[in-house]
Amino acid sequence: MPISYRIDVERNLVLTTASGTLTDDDVLQFKARLVRDPDFRPGMKELSDIRNITRLDVTAAGIQAMVEQDRKDRAAVASHRLAIVVSKDLDFGMARMYQTLTESTMKNVGVFRDIDKANAWLQSE
Image 1: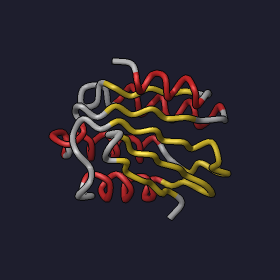
Image 2 (image 1 turned 30 degrees about the horizontal axis):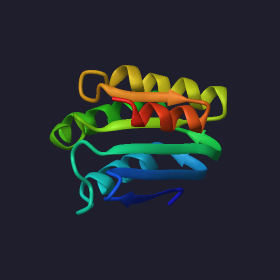
Image 3 (image 1 turned 90 degrees about the vertical axis):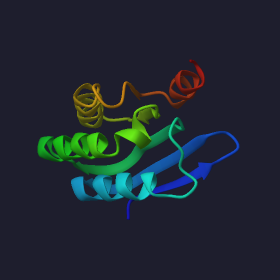
């Protein structure tokens, strides 16, 4: 799977990275796996670094499915703070689409091109 993550319980932080080709199914499977991880807790912060993907095969329909998954997992993700770090324009646009569509469920999603700015945003309240 092109998405891996590590949960740092002490820092209340999920560190996610993606590489290679990223598809709708990859993201949906990851989201389901993360919220069911015994170390994941509502209110965690997540730094999602997708700067190393070589191809984004995420579709508008896939983003809609991700938003629907967030609605189903609302209890786990409503207070989740997610910073998505991208390097390419297409990735930025798709991440912003997700950010906009999930506002009613996840109010704390940020999209960044700079990992230091993403980290600073995650630490701000």
